[in-house]
Length: 118
Image (cartoon, rainbow, N blue to C red; front, side):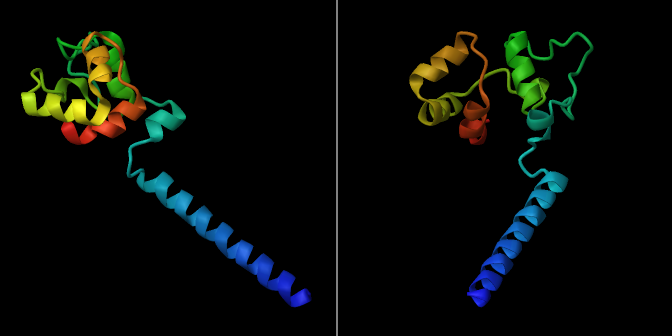
């Protein structure tokens, strides 16, 4: 029984150590640019001018949502090609694409689903 507990707690220690190391690596490298989302900090990218209106086709809440995800709204294309729109419809669904076109702000889920379309 003593050997079982020894093996059990050593295994738990190893698993815990691996999890701690993985969290440290992800916090340092931030491969998915999640720090602004988690810690609520400023985006590493800023708008092009001080007015906050860096994209003429996006409303302010959409620009803020993009900045929260770490995307500079000024770098978003001002025209969406038919191929890009088809990709958005495929990834998000026609109803959600229409909601975003009507002015609804994209969510984090929308961004992660459709980031390959941009």
